[in-house]
Length: 426
Image (cartoon, rainbow, N blue to C red; front, side, top):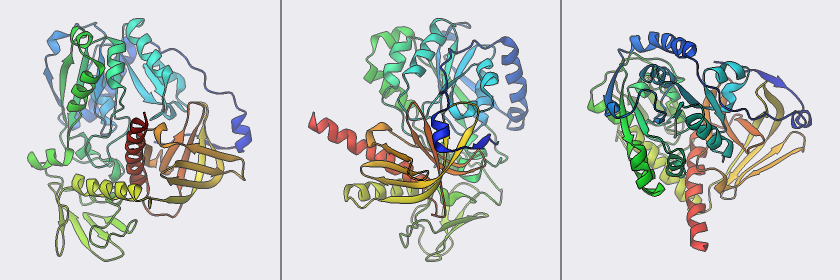
């Protein structure tokens, strides 16, 4: 899927009128039917089935908050089917609205900027459940998983649930990640998909519990491992290209410790620096072609990379400096390509400079608990996105190896460190 991109000067983009906030629109039955019909083709192909747990406790017209894990594009098709004919609004990344503003609003989408404090989003969600009497669907992880495990949830989920005061439903998918992992270019594989739809909390239970207690309950529901699910259920994935793009996640060689020299090709992953080769088996295990298999489980390899990044941050040796192409988003008419620059990331946070000296933006560690980063974003390239409520900067690294996953890990660990230090001072 592509997105409209227009070349403009940086100062011209800054002068453009900013995106106006509009209240959410109630989803009509017509669009609910269209979404369900459009979703039926993929779901039939995956032999989709849904296990409903305790759903008899919620009224057919009762607004609720639906929290769903995020694995691939099929997630929207699943929610459009399992909630039918219930009316719902769905929280959607703001860049999805570019060129599609009115159609997305008509189908009930609520725009938000990922990993950025957004008070408008909270107001829009309250408006949806209280005034429109509509349910709200939210992917609290905000981004697709890189390694098949849950990404961090915002600390504010418990408080949000308390503010909305409506029942909470969770939807957890099985097979969606294995069918179409982000690292693999979202290539579709022949994998069956299913989901558990669970009535998690009633309005009465929400009123009785603290925000901290609710936060723990929700976090427990978002503990999963898609590769372990594949292994435990002996899900066979024979596609020869299953390891292509895996270097975006497993960017560091566990034998020689070199970064950015891993290459995924076919079913193999190898290091260009030392020559070590691994195979991603049909059942989701990593096996060394020769010698020791350091990490048989992909999430364990990724966890090791996170520990390495944490150590670099603690020892003050972590440093990213990369040339980037820069795009901006200030409205829903287009993404604006404004020039080139340098993106730096250290323990002090991000610093983006460029556009012939006109751009000089700082993004502090406590500004985001995670990072909006993606692979082959709208068919443009791997991206690191930072910004604030006024503007988003989409940075596309040039000729630097695979840095997107490491930068996300560093952002998450840096946030934890900065938060801990802030509490210690208080």
